[in-house]
Image 1: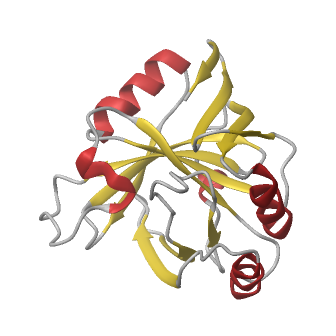
Image 2: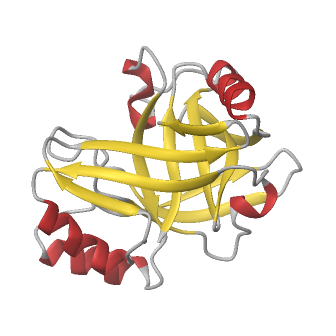
Image 3: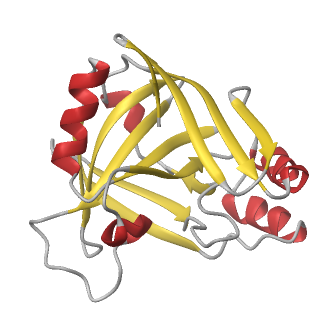
Length: 207
């Protein structure tokens, strides 16, 4: 099932303000990814899903490596990836997807503190942003015992469709079967691309 969409940006505050004003929804601070040089702001997308607006964190020193989601190379906000929350343990799903010929990489531990001081801990695989995938193949997450971010963010928008274009849609369909299919995902053949349609209080918007 879809956990969240990743809207990467070179400027979190500017992009969050645009979403807030254009969509007519609340957008709240998520927290900093300490050591990775990024922070995020969030808004809900219905059905225990949310939009993550992520970009550089000016309060952290620049890391020695590239920041996640390619934010260092962006000139404007872009929908770069999406995350799935499987019902099965992550190692099982990673193994099943590897048998299909796609390596989702290692499972890593992550943490961040919410503005209210609550510390979230989770495990995830890193997104596949290379030319073969460009974020169309989901990365995976397990929130462990932490509260899900959608529990504490505004829920005024709804994800109506995630349209994924992929060179091998049948392969990606098999991956989604292992991850857990979602009825809002549409697949088509072509160069890798993500596009989301979101219903908001001020109409429908595309990402």
